[in-house]
Image (spheres, rainbow, N blue to C red):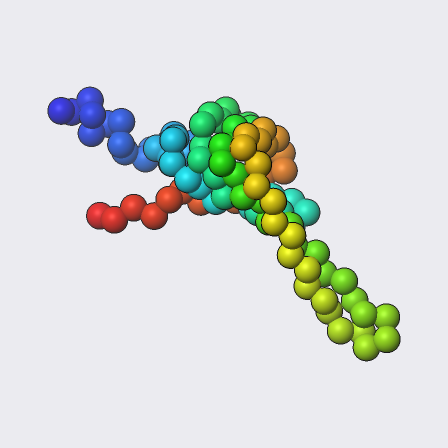
Length: 98
């Protein structure tokens, strides 16, 4: 039982990622991109392989006449995606109830 308890404790930041394996996570990337998908694998550089991914790309344009900001959102689904770690800003594990 003690070994199992040690497996679920968070002592280092990557432990939180390890506990999220095979669960859906949220990843915020540079370039106003967001991903939601199932974490299949990762490494110490935060390179990740995600499955059943929904990618959201947000862009802001300015209207030339009114100078109003126009926010556009594009979404796409991808079966598998390799995410390079140097583009990762934030990784949010799934919500867990205590």
